[in-house]
Length: 76
Image (cartoon, rainbow, N blue to C red; front, side):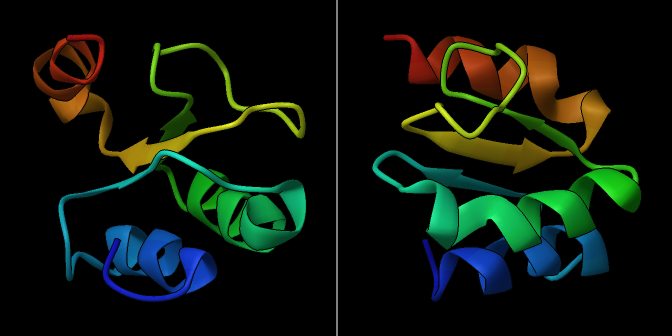
């Protein structure tokens, strides 16, 4: 993480960073940023590659092209 969860998620959309990995979060930390990222075309999942939800304890936002490269690394 670089800063606030919402900022990191917005930076993925803006292209300032390629991905963000937030391993411990609460819904109030990520809800707004997750919505912005999804609506802008980013993929938002948990560390296991499952669809992110309010019950998720981790948040990963990235472009769909990076999914196959990044998610396996997080499972190790």
